[in-house]
Length: 221
Image (cartoon, rainbow, N blue to C red):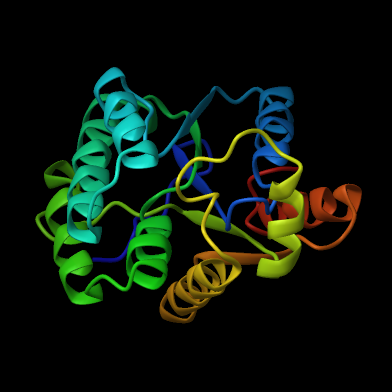
């Protein structure tokens, strides 16, 4: 049940997490370029989404009214296809996979934000993310999760001037407080996997912190 440790030039799986407005997407391409400069093949993707089927499910999850269980089931269905069709093949090739959100977001948004049963989410996580080729008990998790931690009030201010919000971005500040607490609980449960970034700093400071989190692992010079 512990994520595998890749060889130096083996596949790497890095997820980017944070509440809407935290600015994580700004730094994904920068990190991709840093890996490319060092000769690594990079696969950029996102959740929900990443495959044609998962992108269709993403549209439903972000826009259609539904209860928390339906949301969770659709997100995990998209994740299963994403893993099978894109993430696992990319890791097998030795790519660096950079994913804008993964399972921590489900625990934060559907679990923390919506109040859905965390035990049921854990069961879905184990069903969907098992990788039989790695062993019967191997559950795919990121090798590193970069969490862009930002006060909910600051995120709300940033979103106010953004594009037309989806149904999650339009939630009240209290919802995002619960989401942030959901992320915190995931970090407490898996501290070695998380790098907590203060996303309230300047863009350059945040980028330096992201770079340092990867360099400490020995994955970038």
